[in-house]
Amino acid sequence: MAKANFEVPELKEHLEVPKIEPGAMAHLETFKAKPEFNEALGFPGELSENWQEQAIDAMGDMLKKYRSLQVYMDSCVKCGACTDKCHYYLGTKDPKNMPVARQDLMRKVYRRYFTFGGKFFPKLVGATDFTQEVLDDWYNYYHQCSQCRRCSVFCPYGIDTAEISMAAREIMDRIGLGDKYSNEIIGKVFRIGNNLGLPGPALEDTLEGLEEDVFDETGVEVKYPLDVKGADILLVTPSADFFAEPHVDGLIGYGKVFHEAGVSWTMSSHASEAANFGMFIGSYENMRKISQRVRKAALDLGVKRIIFGECGHAWRVAYAFLNTLAGPWDFLDPDYPVPQHILEFTLGEIEKGTLNIDKSQNDDMVLTFHDSCNVARATRMGDKPGGQFEIPRAVIKAVCNNYVDMPEDTIREATFCCGGGGGLLTDDLMELRVKGAMPRMKALKSVTEEYGVTHMAAICAICKSQFTKVIPYYGFDMDQIVSVHQLVSNALILKGQNSEDEDDESEEDAA
Image (tube, one colour):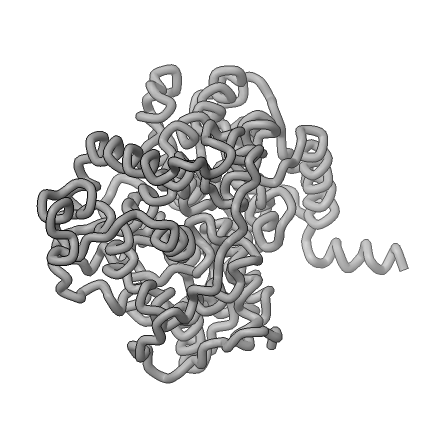
């Protein structure tokens, strides 16, 4: 079990609502962005002397632009339905991590400057001045929200706390108070093309290595093409797929599926990132600039279809906003969805009988599946309601013999966040990430003990990275996290693939 310099929550038999500990997470503050990181995104480099006036102006601008934000500010009745729904509150016990309390950090300021009662009778209506102390609370606690929207599912008024967190972060960015992790990453995408800063030659070298690995394993020449003009399909996938474990095993699986389906496809060095951190900081303009890279790549390469790889929030941006941000897409083939998820494509090939599947290749595992927040609560997949829940499970069950779901109140639209989403996947927030993962770890433990589950599959790059880092704190092994297309890759028998007998003979000859 990994060692921690903070208290790791105990995994009890039942999920308990903790007794509040005011200020329990007040000490945790993610690193602030340097001026050059903020300026690269079109924001002031740092706070000015009149930051308060600028912040109130920014809030007023957003209230006019986004009617929903004012509705969220006005409609909360403090019913308490959301209080015990946030994984960060359950894991940290800090009352400011209750969704209603986190919203109130903004609502108190809103009342002070934008309501009659707040302007003239602030104490009577719970309004407060926008002081440095309040700004510090905003920075701390709006960076302790992963924008997972679980609380919104249970809110009787439909208040979307994620939208409030995004608005707060945009206001802070607009006065020169951005966070280092997200803003530095967005800058890398603008300069290089992806979150990890991998230049084209590095991508090309990695993909050549994958081709060699697959050939060594199977004897089949599966291609992982980059910047091929005239290909039918552009695959846009998170940059973590190019090297991190278990992400890269998923990328190997995508290539095998495309190979067996007989389609022409390519990736792009210009749009070598599916993730879009512009959403995490609430910046429409930065989200649009990142999405425009996908449009340019599609036009330059002359593709007919766009397919997104396994990434949760990237699929939300693609599914919900891509047409607004970078459309129209009338130059693509209208016979296919724009965009399409890789799981839709793979399930379609399985149902057509294109893929030769040997499920026994995954018999060393008993699988369960983690529904990623942005996929589960903010998108669909396929052409039927609930496809975002059923299609991943259908693919897993098609390639694995042993599968069980975690408890019903922790999956599908009630799924718990991994604890690292929303731009919080940074080591300076490790305490928050570990504590926030507690509800999911408890659910995993329950199916481990009851059904012998050995591995948990995920379809989000952030979830995979977060889980491999935090599950050792709860006594699990990091290799218990797998990509769904890693399972597909294991079970997929390629045409002309070496048999096990041939492999044994080759090993004997080599000996």
